[in-house]
Each structure stands twice: as C-alpha cells, then as structure tokens.
Length: 365
Ligand SMILES: *Cc1c(COP(=O)(O)O)cnc(C)c1O
Image (cartoon, rainbow, N blue to C red):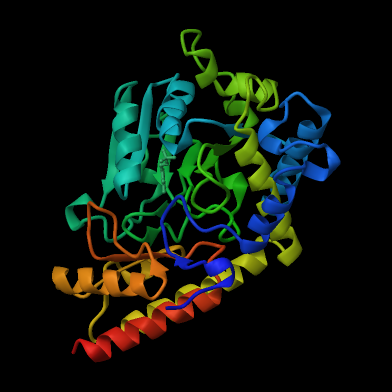
C-alpha cells in the first residue's frame, strides 16, 4: 500500500478532486485563527475588510494567472456548473433566440437540453453516435450567423476528450465550459464571450463557478429573469450581491497563490503534459489496456481506458484501491477506468499508477 504524508492516498477522482497538499496545509494553519483575526474564514462576515481583501486578491491573482483583459468581468457564483447551463441562455438568448451547441459529452448535452427550454437551441455537431469518443471539427460556416451565441464544453470530463482547437464562430460570441480544464493549460480568454468553470475539478472545494464574461454580454437579461440569475447584478456588486461562497473563494485564492509560486499556468501546463504523456504512453504500450478516445482529441486531465473485459476492469479498480490508488472507476454511464490527473496530482501519483498497471498486466495475462 502506497501511503503519503498524513496517510493520504493518490486520489484520481473526477470531482470533487485532489487539492495541492501545501494549500491544504495552509488552510489547516488558517483554520482556527485566520491571520490573527481570531476567527476562521468560515465564520467571517463577507462584509468585513478581511474578507474583502481575500476576494479582491483571489480575483487579482486569477486575472494575472489567466491574463484576463480589463473588458472582462470575473464572477464568483454559487450553483455549481449546472446553474450555468441555465444562466447562459437566460442572459444571452435574447436576440434571435438561436444558439448553436456542439454536443461532445454529457455536460454539453445537459447544457444543450437546458437551452432548449428557452429558445431555438440547435446541436450543430455531435459525437453522440460514437459514445462521444472524439471531438467534431467545425468551421465558421457551420454556425448560424444570427445565433445569439455558440456553446462548447472544452474538456469532456466523463469521456476523456478535449477540444484541441478553439472553433472560429465569426461574430457569434463563443461560450465555453472549462470546468475540468480550468488553469490546467494556457488559454486565450479573448477568444470567448464567456469562459466559465465549476470549482471542484481543478480549483477548490465544491460550491462555486467562476464566470469570466466579456462586458458587452452583461445586462442583456430580460426583466423577468430572477435577480440572482442575471450576470449584471453580480458584475455590478463584485460577486457580493448576496453572501458569496466565502470558503470556496478563500480556498481558490490559496490555490491561485500556489500557482503563482510555482511559476504560473505555463509551468503547470508543462507538468500536466509530462504526466499525461507518461500515462498515455503506458496505455499505448500495454497489451491489456486500451485508450477509449481518438488520440488527437485526448484530454490532458481525464484519461479514460479499458481492458475490454468489464470483470477485469472491476478487479483492476478494486486492487488499485488496495494500493492506495483510489477513484479509478469510469463514470457510471460509461464504465471502464478514468484517471483524473488534475493540477494537484503529483507526477509520483501517475508513476505509481503506471507501475501498478504493469504489475496488474503481468499478473493477469
Ligand atoms: C462537473 C462538471 C459540470 C457540472 O458541475 P456541477 O457543479 O456538478 O453542476 C459541468 N461541466 C463539466 C465539464 C464538468 O466536469
């Protein structure tokens, strides 16, 4: 059994997921008395000057790390990723009431279905017929030029695919769900009208989405949209219209500080590319394990693979667990294995998994 400091295991969960150990240690240090305030951040008024500093620094660090231009607002919102499936159409489907979706997995499908409640949402491309094992390549002509927006899910957490290009939508604003890739690699924010992500994959505990939105897309929601669901209220109030997800924002802020300490997203990306390359190479070299998606569309964060025998998959997952390599089961809708190797997964964790795969293959030939 491989055990880390504090008897921790290597956690390959897709979300909520692993956080950097040094951030957890800092959080523990701060828990009972945050920087001499005599209280925990959990107990602190969100209107206090101490808390204002926490949220302001989190936003400033995020802007610096992701190179977010001044004409974009950063919103810290409750409701998780799923609420964004509704907030996007409620705020943007206000002109032609058309929106074009590329359906590349469960999360894109859910977003698409939600948008159908509000207007003419159209799936302009989909890989559903092939169990979402690849990402469609779309061209500008594929989008309706009068659509209010186009929507994609950049990294498909469940299937293990990623858009390795950013579709050209012309003048149609592009909205992207970047939940499971958030800060895993550099991304050009200016290519998007909205770039949003749920926190619990790569940033912080559950309970928040970060929405990066271009200013001209704010303030379009019709008057009957519930107050909380209007991006404008949050933009105007600096994510403080009501009590924000205080604790999650604080932990996210500590993660941002950690990312700055290690050298920023470029350095993180290099580490992620190294980890993913090692794991995919091990899968490709194996006679037992097979990747489940098109090689050119492979995700950097969620690595999906199978043995081809459901019972053997189960045995692998159970024995890996015994070794301290946990949460390797694929999503309940697809089976097989999925190793989520988010930012906080150390390279040693990936090495331990590869070593275990080799051992398992030798023992189960
Ligand atoms: C997890 C996930 C979601 C859903 O997030 P919730 O916070 O559970 O609503 C949406 N999109 C992607 C890509 C995800 O990985």
